[in-house]
Image (cartoon, rainbow, N blue to C red; front, top):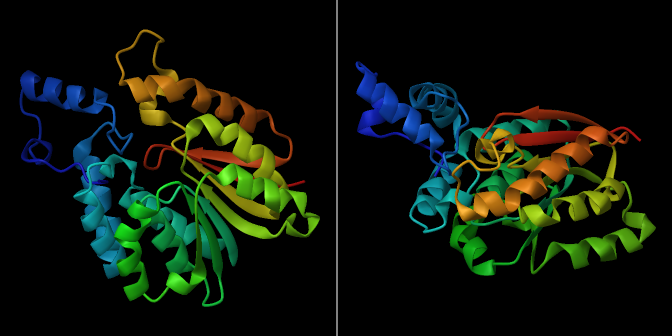
Length: 258
């Protein structure tokens, strides 16, 4: 879940022990904010995010929090960011790779015009169906074309037909990090010039700057090199402009320029 509130978080450190405990909390892998202060992150959520969060997104966030894999969800502040970004670029035809319970998908669907479309892909329909009743109640399910299964075969089919080239306004990727490079090779043809691709988790729990021997969970260590490879490739790609932001677990916004 995006929030990190605990009684210890709410209390301001008053001695060395409290400060040490706070430092240890932020070394724990899975912390959804890269800020060095839980109190500051909570301030952002309570001041800017939660008061403006649509009721349907709040409901889905709370349902997802009860799921055993809730660390996979998009944070509430990132959901707000995506919703605004889609409106700023006037997106209509979009794609999402990696859906989970659909929090970011709902943020996208709510931002799109009534005739907007999302091609949504995930290997697990069961997780998607957990959030589907909330998406339906929000009145935006008709915008979503959900495909269960790996995304690469679908992307290969799309790329094979040149009519699909340059037809997507916005694409969000929050899926298997070991395929991010493979996704980018295909998505760059599908997004229009001036369109946007967002890659999630590009700071990967802060592990991108950690020493090789630093303690980290197995899944973080496994995917770390793939994230580093992606970041290097995006920085060197002349077809895009990029902006890496410390929102959620890090998101890199790529705008296609050629």
